[in-house]
Length: 524
Image 1 (cartoon, helix red, strand yellow):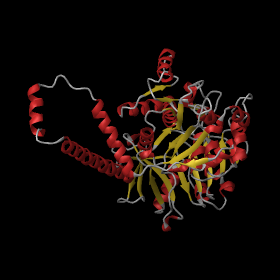
Image 2 (cartoon, rainbow, N blue to C red; image 1 turned 45 degrees about the vertical axis):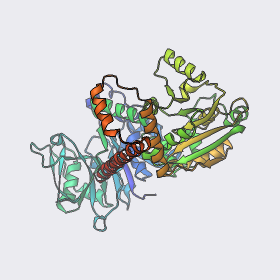
Image 3 (tube, helix red, strand yellow; image 1 turned 45 degrees about the horizontal axis):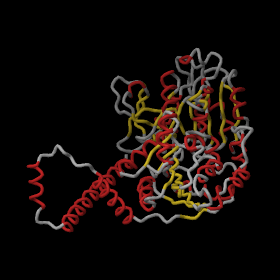
Image 4 (cartoon, rainbow, N blue to C red; image 1 turned 180 degrees about the vertical axis):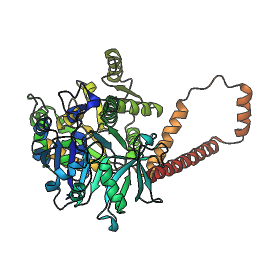
């Protein structure tokens, strides 16, 4: 675990958010489904920092304390301190001097929200005593502190506050990392005209001493300073969209704690229980009554880019059989159903946003055998009782073990056997033993189709799309005659060979373009 200390400055009066903040701390307002302060805490946890000092106002410190206590439930060591007056961001490093001790420190502003995979980095040999700021490319740099770099390095050449002619598009965000002696340097700062110890003055000290570096946040980074109504709303909408689309939580402290190894599995379960109904049915009882003895449980590990192709290959192998594919979100259901339709699979989709009439119609088609594949969310699929379902696909692993039981229980009805297969990514592999232990099941690894088989299957799907394409009656007879003249001397076998060769050549070009595009994105 990182020995670096963390500080969250959760002060300020939140005047731009009044009347919301007249009686409630800005840091306790919601960004979608979590308080604002969860996000900077999550930022520090994602960086491997577990010793955290929260600094707030005399009014707000106790409500924040009641939210986190000592942090032990998350495997953290959280302590608290009061900033009596808004005397500047740099004062937090003086208040936190004892907390920092002889370690580096990461300071994050309590109203700043970062969503990025570029927060952690490797220190270069000559950077041990450097301060670091995090820079983000924006379209309106003149509204912030603008960072200028020395050549193409991460060494900072200058920081200019709200310039009329910005030298770059990179601005300083509310995330800072300092060496162990930072408190001493902060004590020597002279208050600004507004009577505050400015973080800019502290950064300029490191700049003048050739010890200020900047980490450039990647293009996929999202950053919000939620000190205004618009930014608070935009941050909430961003979190909502990501969580609904991906089925993954942002700054879920419980998840971060278990993934970082800060708490045990049993401790994690206890945390989850705190959010659950008192009337939860135990998994053991559910398993005894669900008739799962006829189900084979399997998983296949895939890269994100190959997930759909692996699924399509599996579905081709199950042609003529009926199955259900489960996704976490409505957006994922819609996207997958569209891909199945494009590839001419006999399928339909149901989720909670569809009208009851549409859901009933699609379910009727599935029960009567008019469609073979149903793509569904967990809620929409409750109560499905179709005897001929031979397989269930978990396109996304469920968050709860009992949800997995309900999903897989859709197959192997009426004494028949069935298959429940989960398509997972490498980082989810560690969850399989947990499912086995809690559910008393044994999962077998499903052999993933190789690249050649995937390519051939995609070719078969392409051929089926051609076969099922309706003739275009608007094409003129003269034009068709010209095309026939070109191909008239070819046998059927020769024509198939040429069409297939052309298809393979085109797909190879497309694959190469995608590869180049991904490399460019990674480099950026």
